[in-house]
Length: 501
Image 1 (tube, rainbow, N blue to C red):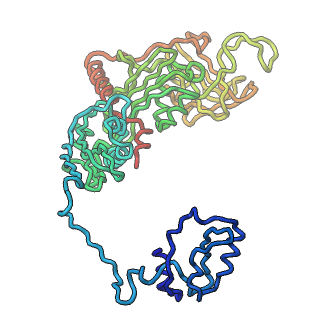
Image 2: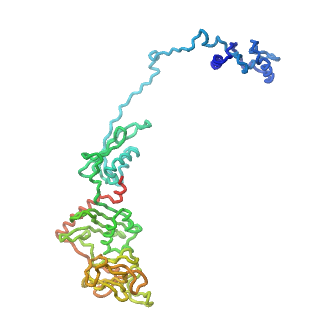
Image 3: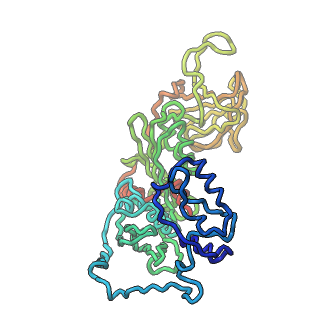
């Protein structure tokens, strides 16, 4: 009705008519077509006021005529007296609203008691073995996002991956409401000591952003313990010891020194397997005047469950060498193999000669290696032969002492300074692999003579080197203890590289 009234006011069909809004639905019946014809007979007959009254049809039933929507002046449902506005009537309906104090407050108001928020909590914990700082925080209810954000704030000051197990932390946790209205545990402050003379503190500002700093240092200053001078690498050999060490960012010259130390006892090409392990500790020298180039302090190799360990030590006479747990030098009178990366292509003993076609004593062993591979002296001594030497081609023969002699044949050329009468040191390059003389391809023919008789080089057990004693042995044991302590805190070069922001 209100909608019809509005139409009546704003359109021209405002002529009042009687309203019949309460006609019993049950009284309207009859054939639809007849009703339609009855309605059509009165459409447009404005002058008949009874045209919109219920009319009786031929059967005596009442019919409500259909309103003529095409005749703008016909609007019979509402009269002007029914409207609350018009001439001499107010245009605004007024409604009185009772004030709140007039209502029953006890029935319409729910009272919620405000809880006092819990105080922040402090705790101290230590980092467990294999646990990261993020792990420790999330285990205490901190979200992964907040734990990562805090750790990211620590990294530029002190790489979090360098934090060792057993490091003690002081942590303050607060309960806060997050963006979604949920109560969460948030780390508002954390502190720990990267080293004995330093404390690093991380604090959250009012916006939840973390700031890390070293106590007493200027803003942005890095931890003095973030600059690592010593590194430790422990790994399986895998496909090759060299490849595994390189994957862990061990410098080439450290790898070379490692293999040289064990070259007296180990054939790296045939004895070392994928599941064998190595342990390397290197860094700035602990003795001597030079600190520019890092040195190998500790070398350990485990083959088939058997472990051998060596430590770098400088004796009272100024000689630097590597010694085992008991203070015996790694150096022996002869190296196991005088070339690196070699494979044994021919053994010691009787064999059918590949060129002569008949069986002949093979007085040495052959190493198949690429042309130009460096050949090193198996031991220190004096050069007896240097140059062309019959079927051996270009060869070098070294007399080490009254007992041992070694011969290296089929070289492509000699190393600089190698000549008859020259003294060479163990491990010194004396020539390069070739195929001169009676040879079918690049390889090194290597012989060892003991008391003038050829022996199998792969089976010889050369005598050990120097044995520390007295004050040297006591100092060596002190150095060994120091190295083992330093190793517990040293990261690998790979860890340091990965921690860089």
